[in-house]
Structures are given as structure tokens and as C-alpha cells.
Length: 166
Image (cartoon, rainbow, N blue to C red; front, side, top):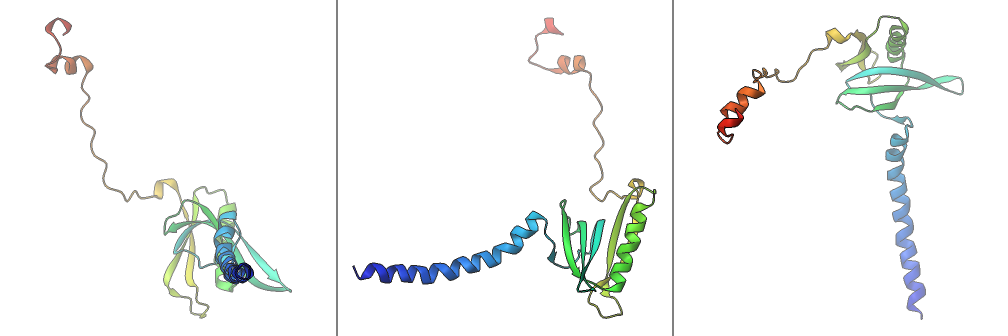
């Protein structure tokens, strides 16, 4: 009977840290699926939906950006939390004003490869309106449709059809 308590203690010592580690690594994934904003960099190009500046103790700390990623392409809307900087907030405010204007289309924010001169680590972003007629289809060219064949002509060519049906 002395082996059972030792065995139980060993299982508890192994199972406790394993469950703790699993929960720590699962929280960001579950939170992202539930729509929580997690600190993550913005994609290179995205469709702007909305943003909100998070103020902590009277100081701007974070910007929560609700977006649909274009590069890399993801169809789901997601909330990104980025560190607050004045240039990024200025571009997002401009995107918000563009969205409120009755111009139509989608507001797309693109980032350049080089970082902003302020040294904040974020690429330089710019907002622009994309109208439906401005979208460029980048897929393969559409194949021409074959000419339509009347059903009666198709039936006559069929060797299996008897002569009295044609």
C-alpha cells in the first residue's frame, strides 16, 4: 500500500505543471478565437473596420484595431492590439474619417517595408479608398466559353441514338 500514495504524488507533480503550461499556451489562441485583442503586429495590408485608443492611468498605451487582413489573406475580421504611437493613430484617424465620408468602397491601409523615422518599429502606413471598379483581378485570365450547341444537334451526333428519334 505504500506504492499508491507515492504514485499519486508523482502524478500530481507531473500533471499540475503540465496543465498549467497547457493553459498558459492555450489562452492566446482561445482569446483570439473569442475576439479578444492580443498584442500582435498589424498585417502588411488590411481592410480597416474600426479602432479604439486604450487609455491607462490617463496615458495612451494601446490601439485596438478591428480589421480584415489582406496580406496574408484571411477572410475573418480580427482585433489587433498594437502599442500606441502618434503616426499610427494619425493614419487610423484618417481611415476613420474616410470611412465616415459617403464615398463608398472599402478603406484599405497599406504598410511600407521601412519603419517610420520616429523609430517606433511600426512600418509607415497609409490609408486609401478602394472602389469596386478599382479592384484588379489578379487570377488567371478567364477561359472563353465554348460555343453553345443546341440540344437537337447534339442528339443527332450521338451514335447511340436510333434513327427514328432524330
